[in-house]
Length: 441
View 1 (cartoon, rainbow, N blue to C red):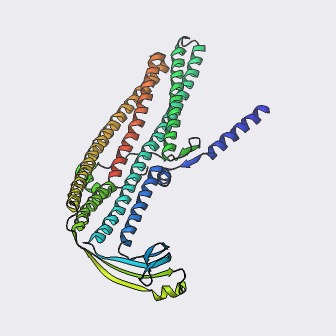
View 2 (view 1 turned 135 degrees about the horizontal axis):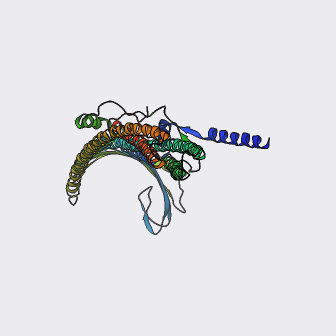
View 3 (view 1 turned 120 degrees about the horizontal axis):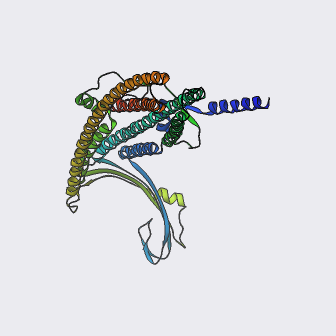
């Protein structure tokens, strides 16, 4: 009764732990990382900063409005600010003014600055998308590693179970006098190796889950498990050529779009720099008034003086640069170098993309060939094991020979599993360059 109660309690605990584990699909992992990854949050801040810069450039078109109030005392011989008469005494005074100014023409500087900062917003968005894609690819890699490790655990458990069964059968045959006692020694050694393989596989699951949680910015102590697809089947479609993938990648990859936007932005620095040497026209307006408090003098009230002394100014100013220590020339040269640098970076980005795609295609084709070779080896290992099993049952081979055959089969199964996941991941990299969503079908 006590034993049954203990087993029931243990079963409840196990069921509770399984239910407590949160199941994460690949899509859920990617979406969570894109919302919570710290690097991505920094890229969002960069977008917001670019938006603020763009607003600042747009507001440069509008007039400003400023108010100024000051007051003080004049001592000795001074000018009465209300009458402009000289007086040799202390005079309290106050000035009030409201002024406004607006740029009418500045050589297209404001227009080009607005266009430049608008491009900077789009470039920041494209760079954020690039980071999102890179993180999605990292998560896909670790996610597949978790699935691979879990399959390795299942294989190791099955191997251990088969070895336990083989040991039990061997003991029966030893007890029946069919086999000598030393026949069980090799099986015991294989059993120990299988237990070690199982522990290693379980550790690999734990390590890869920790790596996944790190990418997701989750607490390492949080208990999660990944969603296991019905079967991870590599695509049977032919891998596209380099040019086919490259042409699509140029349109699909946000890193290339960001590079081209940065290049357009750099080109606008030239007319912005040239505008420093062009005339500038500004409109201005001002309303001002004065107040004075003269001792031993009948002073009108404060607001009466302000009303009486009210003055207005309206005008335009033309500024013509003549010589500014080669500031304009140097700014233009610097802008042109910036354009050249942006063009070089754009070419480098495209060259790097082509090289990465070429490597991805080569790796995918090699992984496909490796999977086919490993599958052929597995079929041969299965046939060899089935034959060895029959011969072992007939007593034609000893335990060591049979165990070696089983070990070859186990190794062949692991090789097929590893090469399958490697090939799937290589195909996902190609999908990544084609701009496809990363998923496991």
